[in-house]
Length: 245
Image 1 (tube, rainbow, N blue to C red):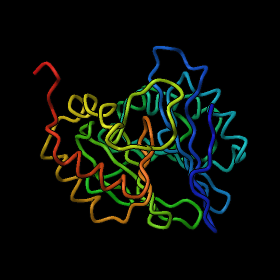
Image 2 (spheres, one colour; image 1 turned 90 degrees about the vertical axis):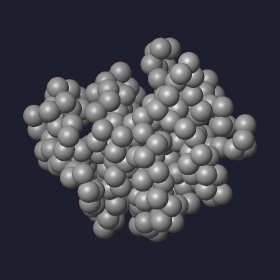
Image 3 (tube, one colour; image 1 turned 135 degrees about the vertical axis):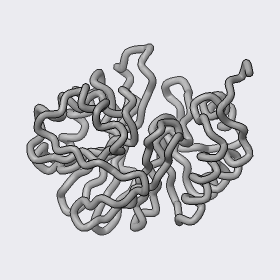
Image 4 (cartoon, rainbow, N blue to C red; image 1 turned 180 degrees about the horizontal axis):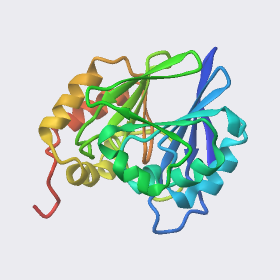
């Protein structure tokens, strides 16, 4: 599994995990992220049960288990959080931040030791070390209760399924040519994002943020001007339809 530091600041860092060459062929590729601040760690969308072993091995190269204090699930999908039951067995005193709407669903994955922290619809914040992260509402993109995470210090937006692309193994880590990248995003966003109104509300929220790096849960990362290019493209895209509609 790839493990790469994508931000290194004076007091904290972001690490991306993914592009696992040993994942089963029919399992969708996912990006997992970890934020480390003052020696404490937060896992963002820690992944599916089938990735737990390589994910755990990769994480332990950066922090010991006892330093993983928080987990975050943007929504309830199995590729996001079905590994919860296994993390629940190895972590002590950890908390899971997740939209309140999905508590009764994610508990099906197994949660006896990890404490559930419901995120209200309006959003809020969570703190790891001395770093405060903003929980940005992203409802209906694509889940009814959905959140993204913004780091104002690093100017990074974790955007969940927004910005996702579906490509073969071996694709570059970051977008290199936005126009050539669009076809890898088009069908996914039209089909999986059900509401133009919700899309417009999200764009208004994130356009007010200073974003230098947007990191989705699938596919390539957007840096610099490509963040704005994505927002402009997404704003113009009609969503909630399939290619056969």
